[in-house]
Length: 86
View (cartoon, helix red, strand yellow):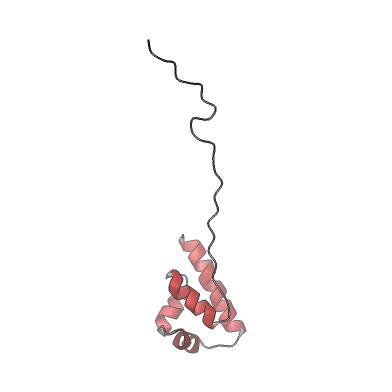
């Protein structure tokens, strides 16, 4: 995951925590992580999905990750058959 996405996720968690009026230290302690680590998560510096999910749960939120895939035609599709050698 790139740094911009990590930053957006962290900012969203910070926003949720602040909307609830929960101090950073309290959220961190409830999640069982250090205040520094919580600040780094919120600052987009750390993307450990397991820890981020735990931190989000403490705030009553959840982190979801999706993988999207659009299959492409096989490389040989549309290519004419190779001529046979005689």
